[in-house]
Length: 219
Image 1 (spheres, rainbow, N blue to C red):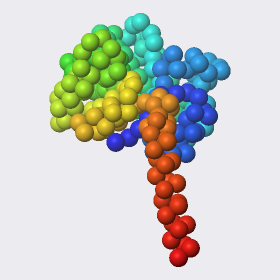
Image 2 (cartoon, rainbow, N blue to C red):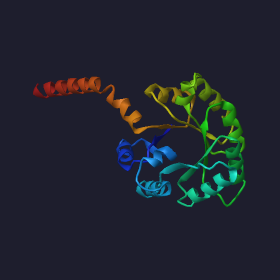
Image 3 (spheres, rainbow, N blue to C red):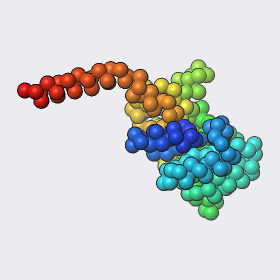
Image 4 (tube, rainbow, N blue to C red):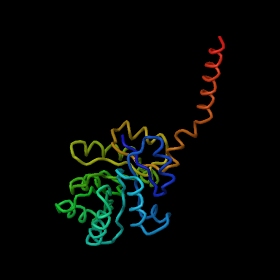
């Protein structure tokens, strides 16, 4: 499984990268708005600061034509930019048009997915990734894990990868891995929580083993 961090803050991203588990960076207009500079400047900065890592950046236009134009602008920042397009009627039109254009070579992620049916149609349009918002599915009263399982099974024979997004709990990482999800996105705090919430017990074990090792050295 590949892990992507939901952030545009270079310091937070570096802290996760130091763990040696990071495959890329996912953003959206809200995440980008928290940083200094225009959205394009922030995306470009991320590409330059973390060369070789995929950087997901999202269009926000209302029409397919507008989304296509924004997608081309984002793609011009570099081949590592993965363009995120919302899974709505205009979005799927834009996605299909871009994938049929041989001059557009950047990968595309269909985002804001809440149902398996959306994921199937976006895969049919040529999406390289589909991003179901697992935490948000739970938030509206449905089971995110069930939706995720349906998406994984429905797309198993396709070339479209699942990028499970909006995760809120450490256990969701495990659940996604068990289902065979290829990629997940999680906030920097969610990654550090995996270690820090059990930190006191881990520290206790470490001190226990250190004490035993020192005692052994005295013999």
